[in-house]
Every structure is written in structure tokens, then in C-alpha cells.
Length: 310
Ligand SMILES: Nc1ncnc2c1ncn2[C@@H]1O[C@H](COP(=O)(O)OP(=O)(O)OP(=O)(O)O)[C@@H](O)[C@H]1O
Ligand SMILES: [Mg+2]
Image (cartoon, rainbow, N blue to C red; front, side, top):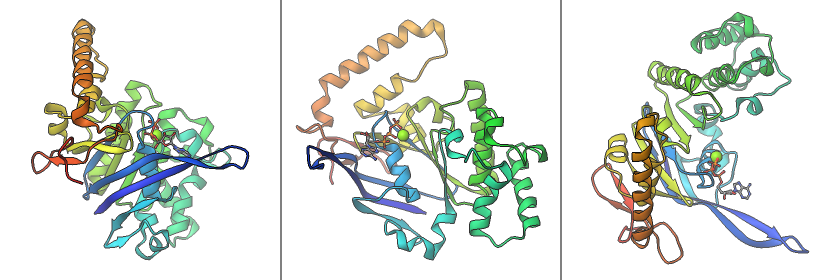
């Protein structure tokens, strides 16, 4: 459905008296991602690895330095193409912090109506009916229509964000850390109804997170990102049961354990993974510390290592 090819985003770093470009941050440096319809994809990596930048580029909130984004046979890296194929309607985003992404001065009815007014030709009455329908999908009622975002809890705001994102029947939702700001119990609620909505409306998710634990039960397929590149990609089973890259192993070892009795064991595993990371570093990173190209292990499973082909 959506194909990202060799995506690069380099941010200029300016400095000095004349504020000239001194160097570039290679936030995204050659990333390929393929998204099929109705599936959930994880884009996982530590802070600064480039995940949000990928999401922003997909949504057109950031420009590309290089690469293609193919949707319906059209390259939407060129933003003027997006209108032609209703791309901006089909692809929506849910943010980590719904408080800052929902306009604080607008009422819920206006917030959810906005995309409907942008993309559909409905009367005022029809729009209100649609907003109510959307609210009921995310488990909310008529009583919230004329309230403001600050009157809700984090979990409720995230539901409002979801209602807004699904307002115009999107094909793909990029969800950037949608539950990171929420309590564990609320996280589960939000994830569950996101899952349900996906089934009911056949939406694809690109789920961005720094925590492999959070997305474990959500994702069909996972991309592990590090230093602006994909270090490993595979099905959920490939990644959790048979991780290959030393960085993926590190992320898996970092998943918080809920079992207190296993604390000692967890420490040992983390030490072993860290040792492996140090000892095998050169198999996975070149002399400049750059992630190698991906090498195919099976039809679904790829790992970036020495001998991978660009
Ligand atoms: N507008 C910008 N100008 C310059 N550098 C930027 C800009 N936005 C991001 N960066 C840099 O690009 C890199 C990737 O940032 P990005 O926000 O994509 O990371 P991330 O994986 O989403 O991290 P986090 O988990 O903390 O959200 C970082 O080194 C960041 O400092
Ligand atoms: Mg981010």
C-alpha cells in the first residue's frame, strides 16, 4: 500500500558568526519500509534514532533529503502529488501527547469536525451526527461535545485524538508513541480499542515506540531503527523469538520485567547482551559506526550486517 524507498532526512546544523551550515545530522539515512493494508507495523528504536522524523515525512510535516514514498503508484515525497490521490485524507497521525496536539482553545466538536470539513462535503447536521458516531466508536458520548481538551484525562484525550484521526476513513494511521504518556492500565485500554478499530475499519498502523514490550501484542511486522537506519526487520516471531542484530537483542533485554523474582536473571541477561554487543560490534557497524545494509535471512527476516547488500 505504501512503499518508502531509500528515505533520507539530513538536518543542517548551523553555527558561527554567519550562521552557516557546519554539518548535517543524518536523522534518517537510507530507510526502506513497506506497508500493506490492514496490518500493524512497529517502528522501534531508542531516543534519537529517527523514528518521529520518518513519521513526519510520511505526514508531510518534514521534507525529504532523498528517497521516494510511493502510494497508489504516485511518489508523494513530492508534496504537490498528495492532493491528486487524496493522500492527506488517507494518511493520519496520532501523537504521543494529545494535550499539545489537540488545539486547547477549541471544543471537542470543532476538533473532530475539522478533518471532516476539510475532506468531506457534509452539512452542519450531518457533521455533528458523524462526530457523535466517532465519539461512540471510541467509547464517549454526547456530553463531551462542548468541552475543551484540558477537561479530560490523558487516556480520554488519546481517545479523542483517535476519533479525529479516523474521522475520514483513513487507510493508514501513523501513531507516534500514542500510549507512552499513559498509565500502564490505561495503555492497555487504548491499545485494545485501537486494535478493535483496526479490525472494524481495515486500517494499517505504523506504530512508533521506544519500547519493544509495548508493541509486542500489536504488531504483525517490526522494523528496528538505530542511528537513522533499519538494523533489523521481520515478523513479530522473527524479532521476539529469533533476534539477530546485537542492537535488537539489547532492546529485547531492556523490556521491563513485571516479575520481581526474575530481577536477578534479568540483570544477568542484560550483562550478557552488553558483552555480546561490545565483542561483535564490528560485525554490525562499519569503521565509521554506520549501520550496514540489510542481509536477507528468510523471506520475512532481514538483518543489517557485514556482507549486506545496498
Ligand atoms: N528540526 C530538527 N533540526 C535538527 N535536528 C533534528 C530536528 N529534528 C530532529 N533532529 C535530530 O534528528 C535525530 C532524530 O530525531 P527523531 O525525533 O526522529 O528521533 P526519535 O527516534 O523520534 O526519538 P524519540 O524517541 O526521543 O522521540 C535526533 O538526533 C534529533 O536531534
Ligand atoms: Mg520521537
